[in-house]
View (cartoon, rainbow, N blue to C red):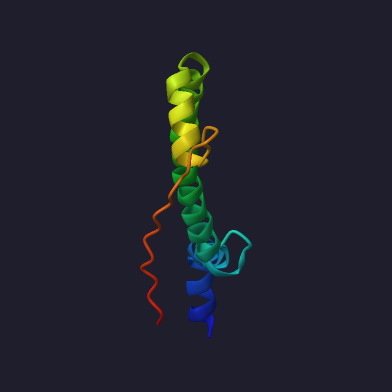
Length: 101
């Protein structure tokens, strides 16, 4: 019995450190699974940030081009928003490939 207490008291800092590591890894609010979830969410947000920054740059270039070029403005209005001149008829062809499961 005396040797067990002697062994425990000899390595008390090691056991304390081990207990602290187990507590931090599994029972604390910042445990391993929470850290993994936060890291994956952070990476997702970085991808979204990159996507939106490229979209902003693209839209800014288009906006600058539309301010100076009326022919481009008319082309986009006709193609994207289906606008027409007076007396014109627009025929819209829709590709219907709807697969019902």
